[in-house]
Length: 194
Image (cartoon, one colour):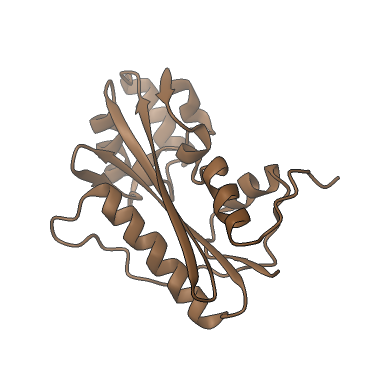
């Protein structure tokens, strides 16, 4: 069975590799990711994952398509990927010393069969000092990351606790993803090549 990952995220490919899954192709879906007026974080993530999955499935009708979208939220506010260091600083200051939610919606589609899951993890971020914030912004690690941080990188030093799936915060909840793939007939090897 041919597997297509509808995401350009290297983190998602790395996570899949941990369970022995190597997509046959990576085809990022080109969709409008603008939140709808009043759209809440969880429905937003679910909608984007489903739209990404459908867009690629229309191009590749015989393949199993896997798509995901990760959203960082504080209450009803969606903190997307910052456009610049100023917006990254704004996001990080909002998260500093507070608890927030990370939701990843995952969609898998094979022909007319589709399955999806949305996983939520609660993340606590310590209060960031001016020095920590400045150093993190200089690192550039915030680029392309929902909420302006990457828990698998330098920002791990800023996260004293999480409740829920760690791989969800990285960008792909592996337990649920493996279940979706298996449910559509894909054999997850749970072996790392090497």
